[in-house]
Image 1 (cartoon, rainbow, N blue to C red):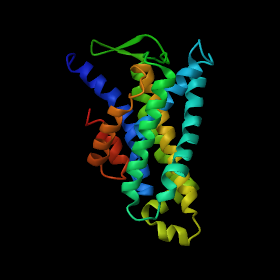
Image 2: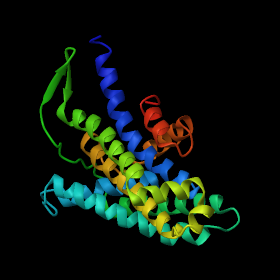
Image 3: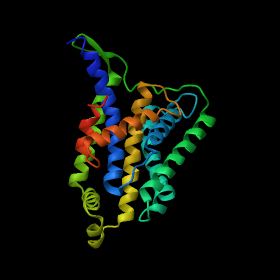
Length: 251
């Protein structure tokens, strides 16, 4: 058991991070019916924003402030992404293909811009907690334990909010049948904006956790994005429970 424990711990850490990214991807697909190829870039932006707010040589506001600013900033970036890159193609022919192309272009533009402005030096966020805890004679850092706990907890709270809140009910109505939802007075465009904001915020949480466990680079979101697509397909397109479970199988 002791030889398997490190593998299980690493898989749980990766699964928690991939679940956050993939759930945002699945959420957008299930509601808007498009794939956002900039989701990995949003993760990267969240990590960089948290770094510059946290770093003693920059804003020096602390990790918790950095995480909070990253989530809020990414929600706003998600809204901007929808309004500028996605909304112009909604309802038009081959909208899904056009959005794939525009989000890929936006992701490439952002990666190049961050690479030029942030420089080549790898960056890293501080851990939320230092030290280790022993499981089956295997040392698991408190940072890894926090990732394992926060990932599923955020998704559970998100699922409860979707199920029990009025806005969550409206989002699920649009997901099931947008025409009927529109007829009962639900503003589809506003729902799409909220969906992109939430999806980007989930990417920000993943970016903050990822940035404390691994290096922060302009291309750090590429591998999580690829894994997220595999997870979404394996878990079922648009299925948040299936996506969450599949995230712990893929790593």
